[in-house]
Amino acid sequence: MEEKQILCVGLAVLDVISLVDRYPQEDSEIRCLSQRWQRGGNASNSCTVLSLLGAPCAFMGSLAPGHVADFVLDDLRRHAVDLRYTVFQPVGSIPIATVIINEASGSRTILYSDRFVRVSASCQLPPPSPSPHFLVTDFRRRGVDVSQVAWQSGGDTPSSCCIVNSSNGNRTIVLHDTHGPLLRTRKKALGQQGRNAAEQVKMLQRIDEHNAGQPPEQQIRVSMEVEKPREELYPLFGYGDVVFVSKDVAQHLGFRSAREALRGLYSRVRKGAVLICAWAEKGADALGPDGKVLHSDAFPPPRVVDTLGAGDTFNASVIFSLSQGRSVQEALTFGCQVAGKKCGLQGFDGIV
Image 1 (spheres, helix red, strand yellow):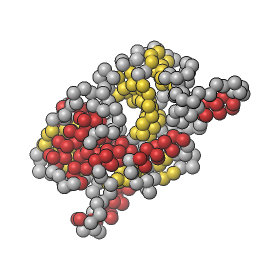
Image 2 (cartoon, rainbow, N blue to C red):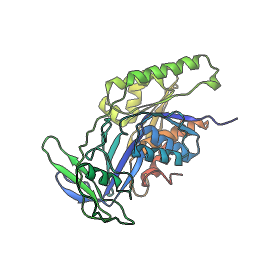
Image 3 (cartoon, helix red, strand yellow):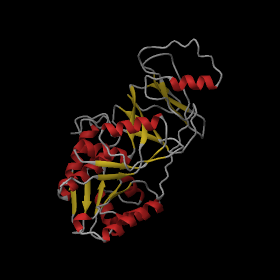
Image 4 (cartoon, rainbow, N blue to C red):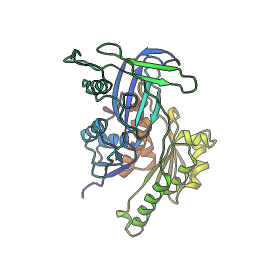
């Protein structure tokens, strides 16, 4: 019998990642060690991990047109992710996250913008290097003579991450200039995110209606992540067979440990569900209908180099393990193991 797909519903974004040897002070300018584009977003990252683990998976989400979308789609295809459920929008742009990774600690700081914006020099990034056509097009639009531009056969177009503090006007620049003259471009970073929880509830209710008419082996199992501390998202607790609650949400609600959060929040989940909470270097706990709290220690790598996507790696690994018929304890431990290995790698390739 053909193995069922795991469908991941949510965001695909572009992560622009700058690796630095120390976190920059406000109103300073430093050079980064490296810079890269990486496909991101919780559902998108989960697809990557599931694919690397060998599970057939599909992505459901919206993508706007443009070269950023082409980059995202190419990378999803590279990981053999089924895109038949992707919805393509005629206008707008893909959300962009500016990520600063501190090489010394492995910590990641994320500035996230998900507004649909017009293409302009201040809000759209150039295509993946080495193409400089975006810059030339914008120069021409502004009447700048580019006839004497010296074209290089190799190298990368310099770029920078510029964080502007709207309260005082300070700008903090992380510059990547592997080739060519110094270039500074200004980008306004806005850290906001919008998810229509009411519409998500309607979707989940339709799954419940479908499951009501199906035998147990044909029912769709739903996992749900409550990641952001926003009141309108909390009704989602009641719609998953496996519910992940983030450390951020748990702490926002006043809980001081994963165990405490599970005990305090389990009444919000549906009957028979499993509630899971990961707590960074302290590992992860799970609570099911039997009332027993399960725990797995963390499995830190010899050196932490990149924690971006570690939570998505944990979630996807737990889901994969459960889909293979493993117990909750086995899935919890497997999730911590794979997430720990990911923290010792740049990106996701190499987790298996």
